[in-house]
Amino acid sequence: MYRFIDNTESRKEKRLVWAATRSVLENVGFLRNKNGKKSKSHWNVFLHLLKVFAFLLKISGYYRKGYGNAKNIKVTRLTLEFANLPPAFQGFRILHLSDLHIDSIPGFASIISEKIKNLGFDICFLTGDYRRDISGSFQHILKPFRILSKYIQAPYGTFAVLGNHDTFLMARYEKESGLDLLVNESVEIVKDGQTILVTGTDDPFNFYTEQSILSLETRGYKFKIALVHTSELAKVAAANGYSLYLCGHTHGGQICLKEGFPLISHQFEGKQFNHGLWETGKMKGYTSSGVGVSGMPVRFNCPAEVTLITLETG
Image (cartoon, rainbow, N blue to C red; front, side):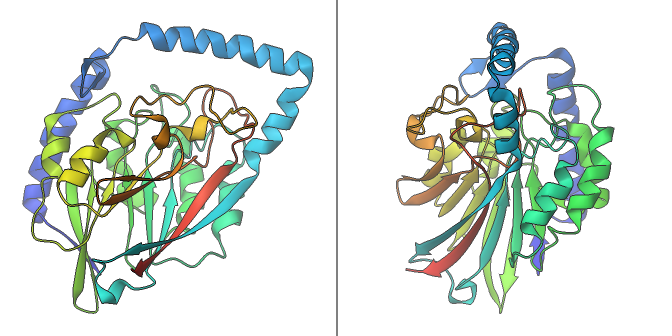
Protein backbone atom coordinates (compact mmCIF):
# COMPACT_ATOMS: atom_id res chain seq x y z
CA MET A 1 0.00 0.00 0.00
CA TYR A 2 1.12 3.59 -0.57
CA ARG A 3 -0.22 7.02 0.21
CA PHE A 4 0.89 10.51 -0.75
CA ILE A 5 2.00 12.85 2.01
CA ASP A 6 -0.09 15.73 0.66
CA ASN A 7 -3.83 15.41 0.20
CA THR A 8 -5.35 15.45 -3.29
CA GLU A 9 -6.21 19.15 -3.34
CA SER A 10 -2.78 20.19 -2.09
CA ARG A 11 -1.10 17.99 -4.72
CA LYS A 12 -3.22 19.53 -7.47
CA GLU A 13 -2.32 23.06 -6.39
CA LYS A 14 1.40 22.30 -6.18
CA ARG A 15 1.32 20.49 -9.52
CA LEU A 16 -0.28 23.52 -11.21
CA VAL A 17 2.41 25.84 -9.85
CA TRP A 18 5.13 23.43 -10.92
CA ALA A 19 3.67 22.99 -14.41
CA ALA A 20 3.47 26.76 -14.92
CA THR A 21 7.08 27.21 -13.83
CA ARG A 22 8.46 24.32 -15.85
CA SER A 23 6.51 25.30 -18.98
CA VAL A 24 8.22 28.70 -18.91
CA LEU A 25 11.65 27.12 -18.42
CA GLU A 26 11.06 24.75 -21.33
CA ASN A 27 9.52 27.27 -23.73
CA VAL A 28 12.05 30.05 -23.25
CA GLY A 29 14.96 27.61 -23.10
CA PHE A 30 16.13 28.86 -19.71
CA LEU A 31 18.22 25.87 -18.73
CA ARG A 32 19.37 26.02 -15.13
CA ASN A 33 21.13 23.90 -12.53
CA LYS A 34 22.22 24.65 -8.96
CA ASN A 35 25.14 26.73 -10.21
CA GLY A 36 23.02 29.02 -12.34
CA LYS A 37 22.00 29.45 -15.97
CA LYS A 38 23.45 27.04 -18.52
CA SER A 39 24.66 27.72 -22.04
CA LYS A 40 23.28 25.88 -25.06
CA SER A 41 26.50 26.35 -27.02
CA HIS A 42 28.20 23.36 -25.42
CA TRP A 43 25.27 21.14 -26.34
CA ASN A 44 25.38 22.28 -29.97
CA VAL A 45 29.10 21.48 -30.15
CA PHE A 46 28.42 18.08 -28.62
CA LEU A 47 25.74 17.29 -31.23
CA HIS A 48 28.12 18.24 -34.02
CA LEU A 49 30.84 15.99 -32.63
CA LEU A 50 28.32 13.15 -32.36
CA LYS A 51 27.61 13.34 -36.09
CA VAL A 52 31.30 13.16 -36.87
CA PHE A 53 31.78 10.22 -34.52
CA ALA A 54 28.79 8.36 -35.99
CA PHE A 55 30.23 8.79 -39.48
CA LEU A 56 33.58 7.36 -38.36
CA LEU A 57 31.87 4.37 -36.73
CA LYS A 58 29.94 3.60 -39.90
CA ILE A 59 32.89 3.73 -42.26
CA SER A 60 34.98 1.63 -39.86
CA GLY A 61 32.29 -1.04 -39.48
CA TYR A 62 31.89 -0.62 -35.71
CA TYR A 63 28.45 0.99 -35.85
CA ARG A 64 26.64 -2.32 -36.31
CA LYS A 65 28.45 -3.88 -33.36
CA GLY A 66 27.63 -0.90 -31.14
CA TYR A 67 23.98 -1.10 -32.21
CA GLY A 68 23.86 -4.76 -31.21
CA ASN A 69 25.44 -3.89 -27.86
CA ALA A 70 22.74 -1.29 -27.23
CA LYS A 71 19.99 -3.91 -27.54
CA ASN A 72 21.72 -6.35 -25.19
CA ILE A 73 20.35 -5.38 -21.76
CA LYS A 74 21.75 -7.03 -18.63
CA VAL A 75 20.09 -7.49 -15.24
CA THR A 76 22.21 -6.13 -12.39
CA ARG A 77 21.29 -7.70 -9.05
CA LEU A 78 22.30 -5.93 -5.85
CA THR A 79 21.74 -6.63 -2.16
CA LEU A 80 22.11 -3.53 0.01
CA GLU A 81 22.18 -3.64 3.81
CA PHE A 82 20.85 -0.90 6.07
CA ALA A 83 20.88 -0.85 9.86
CA ASN A 84 17.81 1.41 9.93
CA LEU A 85 15.62 -0.59 7.54
CA PRO A 86 12.24 -1.37 9.16
CA PRO A 87 11.97 -5.16 9.71
CA ALA A 88 8.84 -5.42 7.55
CA PHE A 89 10.93 -4.39 4.53
CA GLN A 90 13.52 -7.16 4.96
CA GLY A 91 13.98 -8.64 1.47
CA PHE A 92 12.00 -5.82 -0.21
CA ARG A 93 12.83 -5.77 -3.93
CA ILE A 94 13.19 -2.64 -6.06
CA LEU A 95 13.22 -2.61 -9.85
CA HIS A 96 15.13 0.47 -10.99
CA LEU A 97 14.92 1.64 -14.61
CA SER A 98 16.54 4.80 -15.91
CA ASP A 99 17.05 6.58 -19.22
CA LEU A 100 14.71 4.44 -21.30
CA HIS A 101 14.86 6.69 -24.40
CA ILE A 102 12.27 4.24 -25.59
CA ASP A 103 12.04 5.67 -29.13
CA SER A 104 15.78 5.42 -29.90
CA ILE A 105 15.63 1.82 -31.16
CA PRO A 106 12.67 0.31 -33.10
CA GLY A 107 10.79 -2.23 -30.98
CA PHE A 108 12.78 -1.32 -27.88
CA ALA A 109 9.77 -1.58 -25.54
CA SER A 110 9.43 -5.26 -26.42
CA ILE A 111 13.15 -5.83 -25.86
CA ILE A 112 12.95 -4.26 -22.37
CA SER A 113 9.75 -6.15 -21.55
CA GLU A 114 11.32 -9.46 -22.49
CA LYS A 115 14.20 -8.76 -20.14
CA ILE A 116 12.09 -7.90 -17.09
CA LYS A 117 8.94 -10.00 -17.54
CA ASN A 118 10.18 -12.84 -15.31
CA LEU A 119 11.70 -10.64 -12.60
CA GLY A 120 9.97 -10.49 -9.23
CA PHE A 121 9.86 -7.10 -7.49
CA ASP A 122 7.79 -5.26 -4.90
CA ILE A 123 8.11 -1.72 -6.22
CA CYS A 124 9.35 -0.07 -9.42
CA PHE A 125 11.23 3.22 -9.78
CA LEU A 126 11.95 5.06 -13.04
CA THR A 127 14.44 7.92 -12.88
CA GLY A 128 13.80 9.94 -16.02
CA ASP A 129 14.52 10.41 -19.73
CA TYR A 130 11.79 8.54 -21.57
CA ARG A 131 12.18 9.96 -25.08
CA ARG A 132 15.19 10.42 -27.36
CA ASP A 133 15.02 14.17 -28.09
CA ILE A 134 15.10 17.00 -25.57
CA SER A 135 12.21 18.87 -27.22
CA GLY A 136 9.38 18.38 -29.65
CA SER A 137 6.60 15.80 -29.64
CA PHE A 138 6.41 12.90 -27.21
CA GLN A 139 3.09 11.38 -28.31
CA HIS A 140 4.89 8.66 -30.24
CA ILE A 141 6.34 7.16 -27.03
CA LEU A 142 2.93 6.56 -25.44
CA LYS A 143 2.24 3.38 -27.41
CA PRO A 144 5.57 1.69 -26.59
CA PHE A 145 5.17 2.85 -22.98
CA ARG A 146 1.83 1.07 -22.81
CA ILE A 147 3.57 -2.11 -24.01
CA LEU A 148 6.16 -1.80 -21.24
CA SER A 149 3.70 -0.63 -18.60
CA LYS A 150 2.07 -4.00 -17.96
CA TYR A 151 5.46 -5.49 -17.08
CA ILE A 152 6.45 -2.83 -14.54
CA GLN A 153 3.33 -2.79 -12.39
CA ALA A 154 4.31 -3.61 -8.80
CA PRO A 155 2.36 -4.45 -5.62
CA TYR A 156 3.62 -1.35 -3.80
CA GLY A 157 3.45 1.00 -6.77
CA THR A 158 5.33 2.17 -9.85
CA PHE A 159 6.83 5.65 -9.46
CA ALA A 160 8.70 7.92 -11.85
CA VAL A 161 10.52 11.25 -11.98
CA LEU A 162 11.29 13.39 -15.01
CA GLY A 163 14.68 13.85 -16.64
CA ASN A 164 16.20 16.56 -18.81
CA HIS A 165 14.81 14.90 -21.99
CA ASP A 166 11.26 15.04 -20.65
CA THR A 167 8.52 17.66 -20.68
CA PHE A 168 5.99 18.75 -18.07
CA LEU A 169 3.23 17.72 -20.51
CA MET A 170 4.01 14.07 -19.77
CA ALA A 171 2.34 14.56 -16.39
CA ARG A 172 -1.02 14.41 -18.18
CA TYR A 173 -0.45 10.77 -19.09
CA GLU A 174 0.28 9.21 -15.71
CA LYS A 175 -2.72 6.86 -15.77
CA GLU A 176 -2.19 5.96 -19.41
CA SER A 177 1.46 5.14 -18.69
CA GLY A 178 0.58 3.11 -15.59
CA LEU A 179 2.76 5.04 -13.17
CA ASP A 180 2.66 7.76 -10.53
CA LEU A 181 4.83 10.77 -11.23
CA LEU A 182 6.63 12.27 -8.24
CA VAL A 183 7.26 15.96 -8.80
CA ASN A 184 9.03 17.37 -5.75
CA GLU A 185 6.77 15.26 -3.54
CA SER A 186 6.83 12.23 -1.28
CA VAL A 187 4.85 9.06 -0.85
CA GLU A 188 4.69 6.66 2.10
CA ILE A 189 5.12 2.95 1.36
CA VAL A 190 3.33 0.93 4.05
CA LYS A 191 4.03 -2.76 4.69
CA ASP A 192 2.76 -4.70 7.70
CA GLY A 193 2.13 -1.47 9.57
CA GLN A 194 5.66 -0.12 9.00
CA THR A 195 6.56 2.75 6.70
CA ILE A 196 9.35 4.01 4.48
CA LEU A 197 9.34 7.30 2.58
CA VAL A 198 10.05 7.79 -1.13
CA THR A 199 10.73 11.31 -2.44
CA GLY A 200 10.99 12.20 -6.12
CA THR A 201 12.28 15.54 -7.44
CA ASP A 202 12.07 17.35 -10.73
CA ASP A 203 15.12 17.17 -13.00
CA PRO A 204 17.98 19.23 -11.52
CA PHE A 205 20.20 19.06 -14.63
CA ASN A 206 18.28 21.54 -16.81
CA PHE A 207 15.24 22.53 -14.76
CA TYR A 208 16.50 23.11 -11.25
CA THR A 209 14.32 25.09 -8.82
CA GLU A 210 14.52 25.58 -5.07
CA GLN A 211 11.44 23.37 -4.72
CA SER A 212 13.64 20.33 -5.43
CA ILE A 213 15.70 21.14 -2.34
CA LEU A 214 12.64 21.84 -0.20
CA SER A 215 11.04 18.53 -1.18
CA LEU A 216 13.99 16.66 0.34
CA GLU A 217 13.68 18.45 3.68
CA THR A 218 11.50 15.71 5.16
CA ARG A 219 11.35 14.67 8.79
CA GLY A 220 10.01 11.86 10.91
CA TYR A 221 10.89 8.75 8.90
CA LYS A 222 13.40 6.08 9.82
CA PHE A 223 14.21 5.02 6.24
CA LYS A 224 13.96 7.26 3.18
CA ILE A 225 14.66 6.79 -0.54
CA ALA A 226 15.38 9.66 -2.96
CA LEU A 227 14.63 9.41 -6.69
CA VAL A 228 16.44 12.04 -8.76
CA HIS A 229 17.43 12.00 -12.41
CA THR A 230 21.04 12.97 -11.66
CA SER A 231 23.43 12.72 -8.71
CA GLU A 232 23.41 16.51 -8.27
CA LEU A 233 21.24 16.46 -5.15
CA ALA A 234 23.07 13.62 -3.40
CA LYS A 235 24.65 15.78 -0.71
CA VAL A 236 21.33 17.48 -0.02
CA ALA A 237 19.58 14.12 0.35
CA ALA A 238 22.33 12.77 2.62
CA ALA A 239 22.14 15.86 4.82
CA ASN A 240 18.41 15.26 5.22
CA GLY A 241 18.79 11.68 6.40
CA TYR A 242 18.03 9.71 3.23
CA SER A 243 19.39 6.17 3.24
CA LEU A 244 19.22 5.33 -0.49
CA TYR A 245 19.55 7.56 -3.56
CA LEU A 246 18.74 6.26 -7.05
CA CYS A 247 19.59 8.13 -10.23
CA GLY A 248 20.78 7.75 -13.81
CA HIS A 249 21.44 10.32 -16.55
CA THR A 250 25.06 9.37 -17.32
CA HIS A 251 24.29 6.14 -19.24
CA GLY A 252 27.50 4.99 -17.55
CA GLY A 253 29.18 6.91 -20.34
CA GLN A 254 27.47 4.74 -23.02
CA ILE A 255 30.76 4.72 -24.93
CA CYS A 256 33.67 3.77 -22.70
CA LEU A 257 37.27 2.74 -23.04
CA LYS A 258 38.08 -0.88 -22.24
CA GLU A 259 38.91 0.12 -18.68
CA GLY A 260 35.33 1.31 -18.28
CA PHE A 261 36.31 4.98 -18.38
CA PRO A 262 33.52 7.04 -20.04
CA LEU A 263 34.48 9.42 -22.84
CA ILE A 264 31.56 11.67 -21.79
CA SER A 265 29.35 11.37 -18.70
CA HIS A 266 27.44 14.70 -18.69
CA GLN A 267 27.86 15.08 -14.94
CA PHE A 268 30.25 17.16 -12.86
CA GLU A 269 29.86 15.81 -9.33
CA GLY A 270 32.82 13.45 -9.54
CA LYS A 271 33.78 10.26 -11.37
CA GLN A 272 32.48 8.11 -8.50
CA PHE A 273 28.97 9.05 -9.67
CA ASN A 274 29.49 7.90 -13.27
CA HIS A 275 28.03 4.48 -12.67
CA GLY A 276 27.30 1.94 -9.97
CA LEU A 277 27.38 2.07 -6.20
CA TRP A 278 28.71 5.01 -4.23
CA GLU A 279 28.31 6.55 -0.79
CA THR A 280 27.85 10.08 0.49
CA GLY A 281 27.98 10.35 4.26
CA LYS A 282 25.75 7.59 5.64
CA MET A 283 23.72 7.38 2.43
CA LYS A 284 24.17 4.71 -0.25
CA GLY A 285 23.59 5.65 -3.87
CA TYR A 286 23.37 3.93 -7.23
CA THR A 287 23.81 5.49 -10.65
CA SER A 288 22.28 3.30 -13.34
CA SER A 289 24.01 2.88 -16.70
CA GLY A 290 20.54 3.24 -18.16
CA VAL A 291 18.33 1.04 -20.26
CA GLY A 292 18.39 3.06 -23.46
CA VAL A 293 20.75 5.20 -25.48
CA SER A 294 21.04 8.86 -26.39
CA GLY A 295 22.75 10.71 -29.20
CA MET A 296 23.31 7.58 -31.27
CA PRO A 297 22.02 4.02 -30.75
CA VAL A 298 25.35 2.40 -29.84
CA ARG A 299 27.15 1.20 -26.73
CA PHE A 300 30.75 0.15 -26.19
CA ASN A 301 32.20 -1.34 -22.97
CA CYS A 302 29.13 -0.14 -21.08
CA PRO A 303 26.14 -2.52 -21.14
CA ALA A 304 22.60 -1.29 -20.78
CA GLU A 305 21.04 -2.41 -17.53
CA VAL A 306 17.94 -2.89 -15.46
CA THR A 307 18.71 -3.04 -11.76
CA LEU A 308 17.07 -5.31 -9.18
CA ILE A 309 17.90 -4.15 -5.65
CA THR A 310 17.08 -6.22 -2.57
CA LEU A 311 16.97 -4.39 0.75
CA GLU A 312 18.33 -6.22 3.78
CA THR A 313 18.69 -5.33 7.45
CA GLY A 314 22.40 -4.88 8.11
